[in-house]
Image (cartoon, rainbow, N blue to C red; front, side, top):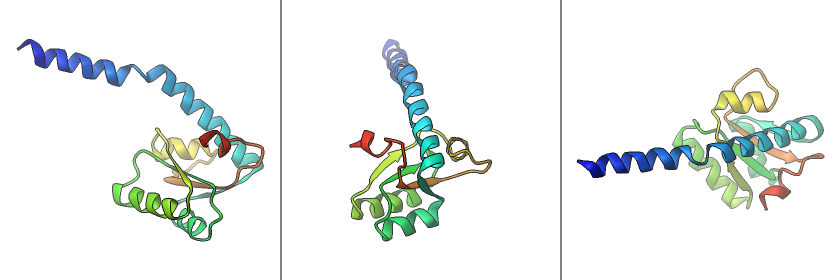
Length: 124
């Protein structure tokens, strides 16, 4: 009876441990994304992300955590063909939209021109 409790404690520890670092990482992505929205160019949404990947204009793709698995894998496949990095954004599509400075939900973002931000270079 002792081992299941121990496993549960270990799982709780593992899921709770990276919380502090993760928050800082999300903040840095948010600030970089905000800078891209101000100084660079980004395509918001699924259709325009696929268009930018097909036309080789995309430099980085961000996908929200609650994007449906089929859609996520399709974007990842296109990104792999276009040799573009994919960032799995830890927040939902609501939080990704807010990070882009929009008042609507955004499932995925394709960065076409980073502007003053180092969001593309920091991934390499």
